[in-house]
Length: 270
Ligand code: HPA
Image 1 (cartoon, protein in one colour):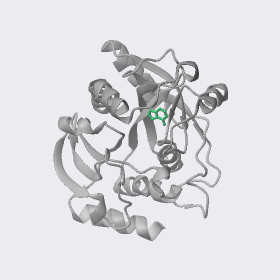
Image 2 (image 1 turned 135 degrees about the horizontal axis):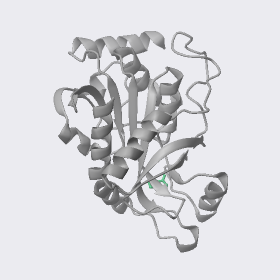
Image 3 (image 1 turned 60 degrees about the vertical axis):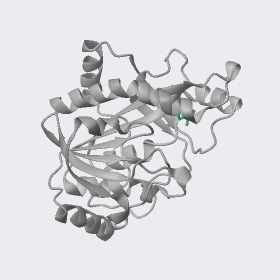
Image 4 (image 1 turned 180 degrees about the horizontal axis):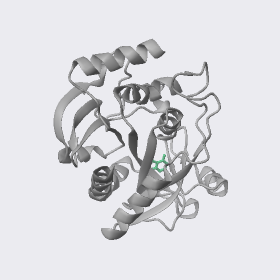
């Protein structure tokens, strides 16, 4: 595994991507951040050794390197999900590679449904904690001792200082932002009414199908993590509307301007 990570990193370096400071993972319908980035280099996932390839249409499948708010950023425009058939190590492989390239921070975004119905569609939720309901953990298997500990502490996987900065930025710019717990659900089928009730009892505020594997692996390697959900739909078991993927993507688009502002200002402070 470590050799594959090194080979992918060295391929990326030979294409001119040197010493990125911040990694950014863009979720469903959230690719527009790149319009704010002075992009120097773009690589197709398919060309990078051992990189998985996005199978979801709304994910671009490109690694982009450039400058945002004066910092060197490396953007995964398109991510991998468990429901695509990749295992947890494959999903998180790019995060391991980004660490080897030098990132110190990882900013993660996703589209999620609101379990906590105080949240509105097209608002943002800063992720404060998570529940892993995926059928696996990316740290299962032989531990990569050179990268992190066997028994990883998870008391604070989302960096409290970064959360505080994001809350200040949100307040200053009057953005509709809340803070809460994200649960990763396997998908790709959406949840039933009974599952929404179960998820609420579990203590989650939002549900999606990603993020948790990448966060575990980033935290394992000592990368500081900030993550934000874009709330695309309301998961109300008593007033359920059939899930409309087009509406979900449209709402992700509506909140994207706020997410871009939040990440851009956050990067400026790092
Ligand atoms: N579940 C419910 N609603 C959603 C999801 C999900 O996984 N992702 C985006 N909206």
